[in-house]
Amino acid sequence: MARFKLALQPPEVLAAVQSDLMPSAPDILVISNDGLLISSARRATGSRYSLEIAPDADHPLLPPYSSSGTIVIDDNVVPEAHRAAKLTALRARAPHASLIYVATNHSLAYERWARVMGVDYYVSRPIEGESLSLVLARFLEHRAALRGDAQGSKAEKNTMKTFVMRELDHVGIVDKPIPEPGPNDAVVKTTRALICTSDSHTIHGAIGPRHNLTLGHEAVGIVHEVGSEVNRFKPGDRVVVGAITPDWGDLASQAGHSSQSGGALGGWKFANIKDGVFADYFHVNDADANMALIPSEVSDESAVYCCDMMSTGFMAAENADIPIGGAVAVFALGPVGLMAVAGAKLRGAGLVIGVDSVPARQELARYYGADLIIDHVRRDPVDEIMKATRGEGVDAAIEALGGNEPFQNAIKVTRPGGVISNAGYHGKGEFVNIPRAEWGVGMAEKTIRTGLCPGGRLRMERLLRLLEKKKIDPTRMTTHRFSFGEIEKAFATMDKKLDGIIKPLILFD
Image: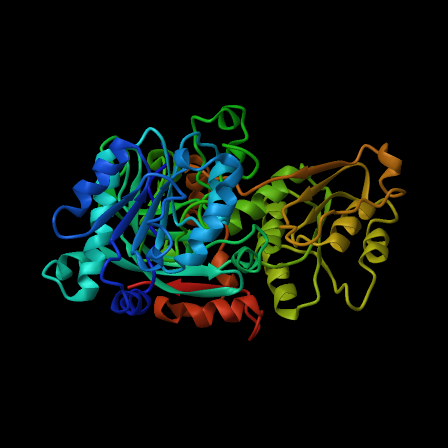
């Protein structure tokens, strides 16, 4: 069953809302005729808080309650054809309420749709009544803390700071409850995190609108709490968590495509379909399979690169199937491209060509093993690569940007029978073009392989071994360091690529 997740508004917003509450506005408004759901809400509210029940989405009680603290809506009482309109109307009337959506027939696509519609907190049937009651109670404790009630000190201890995408193109700091683990899950106290360009893609709409979604997918930390069925980890363990946290019982995982568990890109949960890691604490599903212990010889600053940059860059080299002594071209030398250069060298490439115009990236690419650097602004990369390979082309080309032009160039410079490995995030446009002639009109036996950052404990342990044995030092890419309190500045710097930034490290208390 899906984990409950609650997105709280910042204290100043909630306080302002509460000060203007109409006398009759309930703390919780439940739109449902489900007895279990209603009784769960009643247990949470007890005698200290007000609760109203609206048996259907057209009930006359609904219109004035724009200032309710939280609204629970059961999809059973809303005809499918009207759900989008009802959710849009609810969000418009209650922009500062936490909107909880109870889904009858869960699917990953349904959950994504609900979040696009502005749902903060999604749960599927069958309803775990006690869990719902607990979460609602914790939300009310948080509101009590803001009002100065006696429960305030307890509620404050159960909240944390998070850095969220408030809406498209807007970010900020929001208080949320510290998550709780399910039986197979864990909660990690964050110590180090990295900001990724894909976080920028997200806030600018690459995966659609999100409402108060915690950002970030690269973090390490200390285990804070584990579920009853977690066997490999205990509180106090220092761990790394992959950016991709698959559901390992899914058929895609069993077929060898764990990053796609639950559907295309389904293993990508952090800052996509669940809250990410830019928070004092973060939740990890299937902890025994998705976390790895960090060896004592490896620093947190090094280990955090295993989450995504090393895993994705090395995946690009693995998918390229580079023969020992073969030639490979890497288009774009950002952190993923730099790790693709390093991965190509580790796999025995005889000639590694990097394509980028930024001098600092060029220098790092040489450090990680590039034999030749081509500035695509000054020279035509296709012409230069063909010259360097005596007109034959490379055995493999890696696209590490997510751009139409470098993708086409990767196809153009790959020899017949070679491999084009795409690790770039194509966040713009409806199509990616293939140059017909250089593709051999579809018959040149050029293989295009795509992939999403591999996750899982085994993957993380193997990457950590490379760090432990000093086979690679990813911290050379860390150009900037910020405290978590400075994360808005850090994000803006990364988003706009200011001050020569390559990779910013976020330090937590």
